[in-house]
Amino acid sequence: MRFGILSLGLHVVVATRALPLKRRPIPEVSASRDVLFDDAWDFFRGPDPKDTELNGTKCRAGMFCDPSYVVNEAAGWLTGLDVPHDWSIFDLPERANDRSTPVLEIRNGTWLFRRGDCAGDEWAKAGLDESDWESTKVPADWRDPPLSYTDTNATGWYRRSFDVDSDQLAFANNPAIGLKLSLGSVAADDITFLNGVEVGNNWNADGIAAGDVSMPGYTTTKL
Image (cartoon, rainbow, N blue to C red; front, top):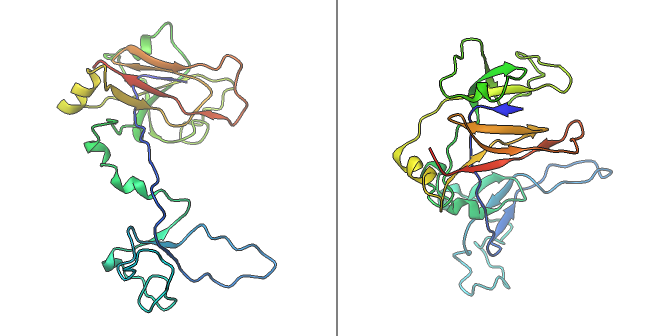
């Protein structure tokens, strides 16, 4: 798989100390089945305001541990969370405002696609005539409609044009920071170009078993 241009993004989350959780009632199930506790949790970030001793060794009326306590979203509770859940993500800035790991969200959406391969890197050129290319939505498997590209050991190209703002341009031209490009899930191998220049590749010399995907990520330091 080859790409004319592509997306980005990677952030790290760090968990802190455990905070109070209150479990919602679970629907009754057959005694012969396992009961899962990994969805529909209520979450409150911070100590229980009524636990003045901050040790949680005693449960009094009105505290989070009180079975009659009623979760109130207006009081700061988040409801319906699935676990595992890393609440430190709430400290992360929106991607558009991320200055430590700058990202440009262009991965999902409408792309141009062309079956097969070309001589050299002709299809990676920025000014290429794209009139023969198909339009398709990503993410998607090219074997599925509307592409229905089912050739064995197939090669295909994706292209997309996008604009960057002044901050993103500055990051891309700063070798100390760069602009992270992330392809997400790519079956087998890829080569990625930006404005006709190769910025990275993910070759697997030994081959990849059917159904396996790679998660390549590249950093560009020049736009």
